[in-house]
Length: 219
Picture (cartoon, rainbow, N blue to C red):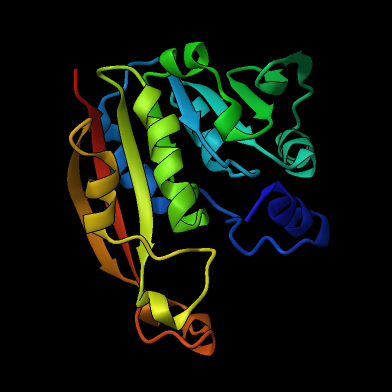
């Protein structure tokens, strides 16, 4: 799976992963992280999620990263924002108010950019990547976030033999395997969501659950 896969999904409008509302699990669990106002929050594989606007409304500085220029342009247009643009080695930056989106590959973020992030919100990034890329993602992104960084991660879990992702099944055990011991991983919520969407059954699945984790970067 490479960048062209996601660029094609956005060109063809196959973006069923995009939510038309703020993720309720974000609203429920983010306040407990007590991330100070003015902190920079990394949102990897951001798409055009409304969660970025919600985080900015909490007084946080949002740093989204998204491959598709269509998604980036759509986000700012739908929010009624006119971004300023500049280019760096990380990609093309779009900045408006408290929101900055880098149109580029999350693996191209430099160490200085990641070191400036005090928090991370991962709703659809880890589960968008196949297993070998998840290991690389954990090392190159989470492995370079600074000590004291706090995070909220939301994953999906299902019998992996029943469906080819994305979204990919990521178990709580895998989350811990990928992030510990560099991060303290605390399970906040586990929910069976199979009955919530009949589409899971039509895709051949017999179970579907979502898990929410609090992440704290160790010194």
